[in-house]
Image (cartoon, rainbow, N blue to C red; front, side, top):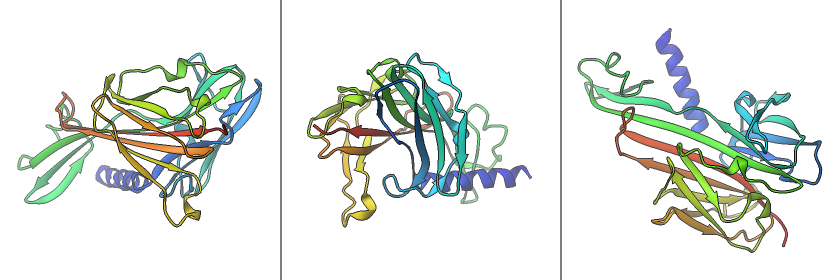
Length: 264
């Protein structure tokens, strides 16, 4: 039974990871407190195209004071899930879907590939005696969007120095079409070179070309992007590092940001 449950979990994880997990709010800026905002949560293989509904129980609303608020209204559908949130304070909120780091150990037995859910500290008691090519990976993915009521604030943008994070030269509420924004990506608090980035805009299914732009961060962890038009856009960031830690041989981090460029 335990093996069957593990196989089902890994199968579900693989199915979702083949798509991009995103949060898309109905509004990115509101002019007064008490405003309600709906947000779609889904995983799709085109930008903001809903495909697989995911559990809204993993969505958190962080208020401008940095406190997690209860989300009273949630819905899970087959192609998308939805949350409705009331914004009762001035400042910037963060909507996020994030979980703890997960650890997978891959190995071979007589040439056959296998894996189990265990980190380096716990894998020894579960690995077969004849296991070879043993590698433990730390995987973590997060998806975020930001909503500002009346005036921008910065508490929800503060770094935790854990995993893949970002800083921006422009507040998310102040991104304007035609004006450059410089993003800095950090891993465990340090600027990370070579983070792979994919930037795309809504309406992909209605274009002959996907219109995706690929970047990599430079030696200082930075890249610059100028939105060509107003509207929502998506940044998908991926980072892998083979430097060993106490719990893993390889660190894999993913961060998806939904942002909006306003009209000039």
